[in-house]
Amino acid sequence: MASGIINKNKVLLWTNPSPMAGFPAQTLNNIDLSKYDAVLCVFRHGTETDMYSSTIAEKGITTVLSAPHLSASGGNFFRYITPSNSNIVIGQGTKGGYGEYNTACTPYKIYGITT
Image (cartoon, rainbow, N blue to C red; front, side, top):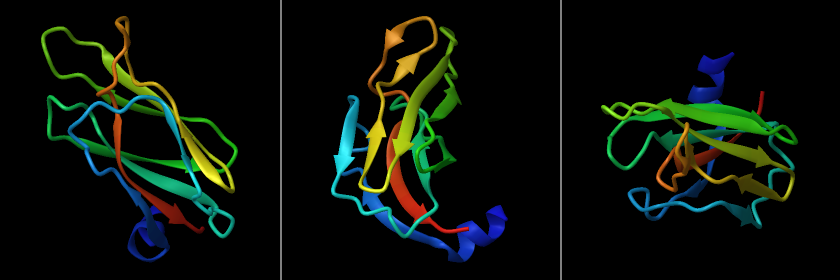
């Protein structure tokens, strides 16, 4: 299923204009998701690295973005995303054991997907 989604059933809905900057918790409004089943969120692990991951989040379900922090201080990066029909709520980035961390799991691109 993932192969089909990635190759033909995705539409770019949003691109972060500053993916290297901190990204506080926020709601992306005026994004019509009514014709999509879920979103595919591509996110940067942190601004200290050029590594990216992606997660599929279904509408109405809070999904965790997670990535390892590859430094001597360790810990993992976390952030949550909750898409609905009219917006996408993106939670505060955190670094395990260190609290708020705005550069953790910074959203880069969000696609609407149908299954």
